Length: 368
Ligand code: F6P
Image (cartoon, rainbow, N blue to C red):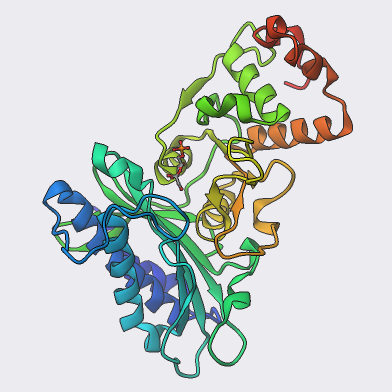
């Protein structure tokens, strides 16, 4: 008889004993999974989802971005599931993309305490077109006594104790790391629980697939232009092979593809809104995704260094993101370093010469 796949609860019960975070962390992740099931049901109802008349629709959130009904409902689902379980799980506070300030929760008992940061519905501009969206979350420890204040949330990504995302696509999946590999669970709608279907995900070190919003090309920095133009040049160009490009405009869907078959994703710094360091949020988008990717053997960088080492200054801080197959991420970091040293003149001078910009084969790559 085929073996029954492991459930999420069994997986957590096997992974956490002996860990200082057990059993609170297991309880917290189970609460997140409950909220994810609720959000999956809401997103699957599409235009039939109950939209509460009191929702402040058509407005922008505190970050000036358009807020959809499902953004608010997903936020509420996470807050209520995690708030309800907080005394047992040790969840001391939470912070959401949809809320300017973090929220402290009733004080828990004696065990370890945690902070939960999340983007309740990432890629929500895709809701109207029925394309995959997701929830991204990050768990940090809260060690000091008393209620958490804003500075307690500002911990670098390498301090995370759990991170994950849910993807609401044709299937709903929960992808999780506790620092021992990255594992994918599929929601069994008949039984109402998650089953371990993708244990130990592994991102191949090499890839010929990249994802970036090329409409921003004229705003990119030189190293990113160099990298993308080489990919686009394909077999006759510096890279000596053809590349494929994807852009779903939903980070969860892009990272999921990379975890399934490799690839590299870039949302780099650009000068479109002058002075903005990037588009994606460090604490609840970049950090959890970076850790999931690293735990699957990939790499995640700002272009200048490891994403998980970026010191946070603000809860909603933005950051440039380059993540995925290790060799490509390292190459992009190298292009940034070469640019800083002025070693990419072979690229820079033709860059300012329209004719050569579209002939990247003009600068040979010797490091294949
Ligand atoms: O966080 C916002 C987000 O929707 C990501 O999921 C996605 O990668 C990105 O923005 C898309 O940005 P753009 O609309 O600029 O392509």
